[in-house]
Amino acid sequence: MINGRPYRQVGDVPAGRGKGSGIICVADHASNHVPAGIDLGIDRKLLDDHIALDIGVDGLADRIARRHGFPAHIATVSRLVVDLHRNEDDPSVVPSESDGQLIPGNIGADIEGRLAKFHRPYHAALADFIDRHQPRLILALHSFTPALATEGELRPWEVGLLYNRDDSAAMHAIRMFREQHLSVGDNEPYSGKDLNATMDRHAEAAGIPYLTIEVRQDQIANEAGQARWAALIADVAGRVLLALDGQ
Image 1 (cartoon, one colour):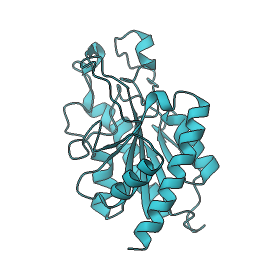
Image 2 (cartoon, one colour):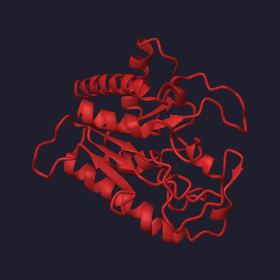
Image 3 (cartoon, one colour):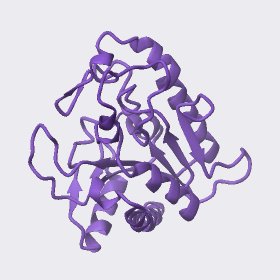
Image 4 (cartoon, helix red, strand yellow):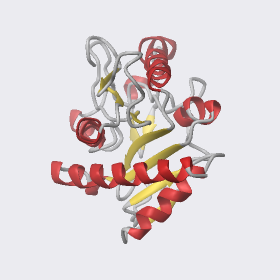
């Protein structure tokens, strides 16, 4: 966490300094940090596993903000502490199990306390961030493991686009990524019709087009991969915005 906050913001601008690129980034699962005073009761090596964070996304979001000019709002607390990409009343907002791993320290946890300390401040700050920037497109950045331990089946997509009701941006991006000869999932490896809490709240409810982008973790596990995908995503996002503006 940064100065006690469950988020950090990169490339932010003071109010009144202009709207910049028209695109911002959000990364709900970018950190594996467990704040002092919280004991999850798990082997610490699991904090480097996909159950604790979206591997590679912190570096990806940071590079997109610093190198490509899309300001980013990035989580600084692990999804095992509180899942910022879940609604407050979702039973998995403080998960007791993830991909077959029991999280014993979350059984009987003070859920209200974690919501008050982490979840609500994160989303309040994101709402303010969006209000300052007035984006015309939001990028929600995630990554997915090549195979779940509980299923074992390989996930072949290099990148996936998720959406709920508003697919206006996603359909353009799916086409553009496929033009790069990539294997692209359409509402894969998860469906945005089931898991879309942050974009439902901050994008669809406000009528802002968005791209929820899931990159396979082996693609962005190192800096070279993050640089490649940051450039790809920035290019596609810019062209999607042009397409939306032209509609």
